[in-house]
Length: 367
Image (cartoon, rainbow, N blue to C red; front, top):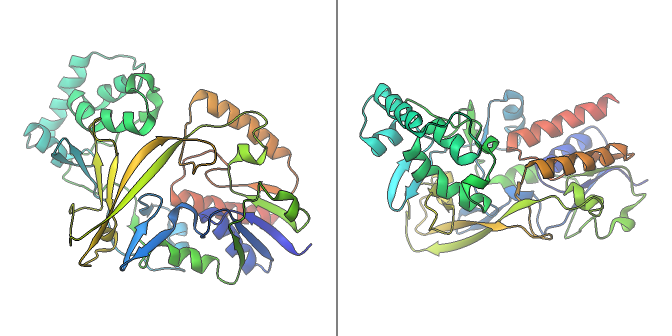
């Protein structure tokens, strides 16, 4: 066999695994369906601005091992994610914090804000939330739910909040401080030069073939490697024999504007139901750009169709049950490793994908 590992997918899981195995003296071949490496973290450069082609990606983690790992390959800037919610022209800071409460109600102290939320919870009278709407109101009250949660969530999932299960919003972040940092993690930033710098460093010296859809040409690659590392959709690997898993899709519209600064923030969420897109991303702010022009991407949620890029797993009871059946099939496969968000049907943050790949490397090396 020519290779030790045939790695399907050049996203973070596949790239980290390929890098570590190559470092250990193994021969790897990476196959990528798209015409570029990097999966969803791929950036497209235009006029010195790194455009997050598949949606905003902000690296954040409290895992020091992962943070130290990625910093071997790229330097991170000190970007802090502080998105703004736009409800019919009214602007609110996210996540829900004292700036949000002060703008919403005119309250000044944390005690006043907590009392207002407690009052609205009590007035709602919800004891056992039966759906997402009731769960959100019981946690944060009616005003914030109506203006900052309802429309955004219904656009994101393509259905009414009363039709969505309560567990989607198990716990909403509520801060009684004037802190607009969206994440609680210890480390945060954007790779200087974009995520391609990280991916290219991980895959340096490794054979990569782009434009290859492994599931369409699997026979051509059989017998080439001792082990296959598969990071694509798990149901597609098994030719959908048990049925299809569901996802939510996304559609992006990117516009070049002759402005230095269009919206004053990298991420603006549009939380009313009437605005068809959920977010507007001004990419230059991720790296504090001063270019004379700007690029802004509007992010539209979409019904997902097979063959399109899959973004968010629909982790309801039906899909989780089906995934478990596919996972059982995967466990029976000899010399095939399944990893990453599509193969595990899981919404992973970037640091979790990297940690998962590092754990898999350790497991394989110990065998």
